[in-house]
Image 1 (cartoon, one colour):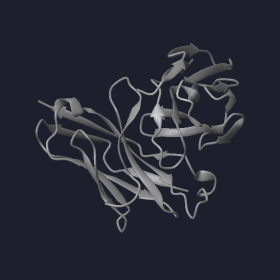
Image 2 (cartoon, rainbow over the protein chains, first blue to last red):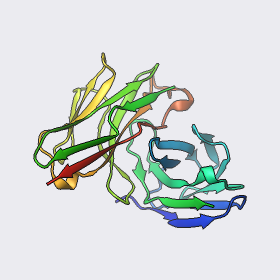
Image 3 (cartoon, rainbow over the protein chains, first blue to last red):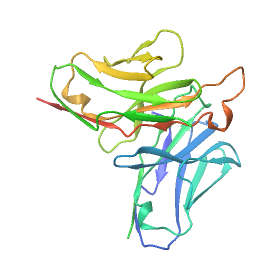
Length: 113
Length: 122
């Protein structure tokens, strides 16, 4: 299994509070991704990174920011959480883009009350 | 932009029966095609992928998928399912690199379908 951990695994927070989710990899892969999974929507890309300090937006990036200061860590921040951001968040990594397999972490279940 | 449609949200079948999970995609450029599987309370893992060459690709656990360019489909099949195949299956596409250049800003990103929950009954 690819070495990907996500923390925390579960979090309950209140509307308006900031939240940071962490993805850590031990594979030295260049690409890292944050997705959210919601019933009926599959997985939707929030942000991704193609190198240290190189990030780009996905299809559902509003309300989220990311940072990648080291190859192994990719942080997802909700500046002011809303109930619509209640979801399961998955981090993924890949060695390159396009043809390369993406390996997924175990997920973080976030509930915003 | 790309889009993926999985035509069935749930597929119930009996053990040892054949199954087909349908996937259609839309894209203005050539794409790579993937099937991922998610077992309960786990992350996704790759089942199989089509990059080029033979349009029929197989996984190690008996699933196969066929790329049909004219119908823009990538349906997943298994001739005889087991209880352990119960999971959610996701079809996905990513933009193909053309002429040595990345396919614009979409290269490397996966676009997923809505998912199909396969439930295998004894």
